[in-house]
Image 1 (cartoon, rainbow, N blue to C red):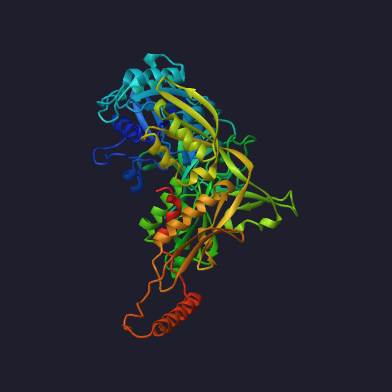
Image 2 (image 1 turned 120 degrees about the vertical axis):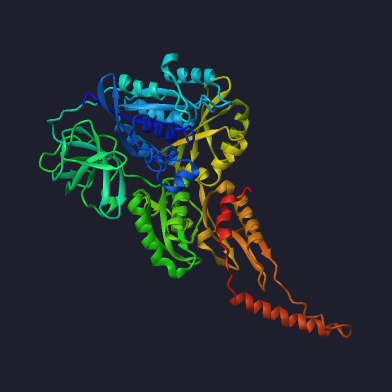
Length: 598
């Protein structure tokens, strides 16, 4: 065990995490020239295109240093705030972390939140100053920022460039010298932490784990503690670039397990694996079921594709257990699914993967969060509202609670005013303001989650000219004065456009929705009223005027009554048309609600 090192890489998005992992693999000879490619551990097309890590990866490297052969297990982590639970489990499986900071962008919000996670788990932190070869780099100032943040010495910060390979040797030396070897008792009952799982269409779910105590052998009967289910270990092995099967994996090491499980739901990230006959008495702390934060309806464009969409969603769920969905129907859109996501980025990725991998054209409704409603009749019973149409009748409603988050925003001091105005407009309450340096400020707000679901992140980047970084964590439910705003087209309610909104903003948002829809819905042969309503009270109205044929064109001269007779006949026809007419809503109308401020 003394020659094993387990470490992860933590960084804000786009600070060079995946590139540094590539250089470490090159330098330790873990990849051949044929296998080399950029962002080697990011194997999804979407990850490469967007330059983000969506799924965490693990890989084992062998490295000879000062006459000893070492095994280095790198557990890569996603960089985006939506996947913070996965990051926390990857961190729990390690003894050390490389903290990467971009020499041009300095410390960002995600860096700090992941650093606190690592410090809570008592990890040894190795600070790395990346991209020092860039012309815009400011190494001295950023090094001072890192020293202030960590309280370390200046010479402990390793200057590096993942692009050119500068400093890689020093990083590997620091991993071996500074990160402690794993501790654990090889003779104790098996205790292993699941930090990731991948679905293989031929072999079922592959589980990635780190052993804290005991060992795991091929053919052993093992038990997953959260689900209580028992399986046979068909194959165990270590994670090189290709999997290499082994007879046994011992304490302190990282490996994979294949048991022929077909359901991704049965393997929960953060669960503890133990021996089914000699069960450990202590599951590893920190396990929780992944909770969706944002809900949206996904419907097929053509209703005949409903079953095909169901199959596509089930296949996606095999790869991504944090996606939850259940069937629902809408009067406007037919049959579809109400889906739960970890955040807006997760929603975008699922939508994009449905289109790319399964050729499904889908309509996504307005995203919303999960509320708790209480009625006067049963004041102690929580009614969970994931869809605005589930909200009980306002006449019997006692109160509604909505989820709040603690938002941490780091920005340049020039933009503090703009960022504060934006957060206060989004019903945020400032709780703290800290100057990290004379130029950089950290602002903390308590905000409703519903307000950041729409366009908050885009607007934050706009008001701060791209300099602000944002991170959040949930802090529970609070009572709020919410109302359901319905949109009526031609007198019929369109349930897919309903939204739960704070009472103070209801009028403004209702008005904007009506104006936006008036521009997007094509004109028909009859007038279409668009109304926003709270209950039976109409709060805003716009009208799409009818396309009219000029029926009086052939009447030149003569008595006015002839013209009036033709106009009255047309008016009756329009009235009849309006009673039986249907209004087709284009897909842009559903997405337009997200961009009301454009």
